[in-house]
Image (cartoon, one colour):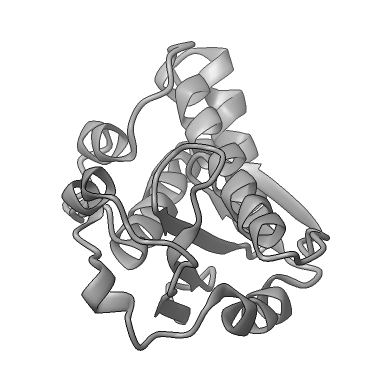
Length: 187
């Protein structure tokens, strides 16, 4: 293990010691009009704090449905982002939050706010990106998909592109990296 990987493992262990919550969101797409259609937040110990579908203000494109399997019918009677956000905000308030591809999920939440005329203020104390940390740990400047990171770490959890599964897998990837922090001084 390289010194850089050891340093990254130490950083992962530091995040674990902060007892973060983990978040994942599924969306209507990737563009400037994409919205949250599912969100999950998991406590540092794996307890599910929130796992809900979210009714977007528009339809869910087929391309998005092919990825996560969430259909318009599935969200028809679910709460909108305006109704889900207060609980999300309460859970994240003052917390450290780990997200696999944090830039994307934060952008989508902020974007959903904007599309619905809501003012965005990130309630989290600190947000860190598990994907970027894993790229450093893996020794690649290239980011790895969550599915690939899970396989490379030997984690048996599936990456279904659903918020709960992805949140639990991201948590396990961080725990996997952190376990190597105990190997200080060893090759």
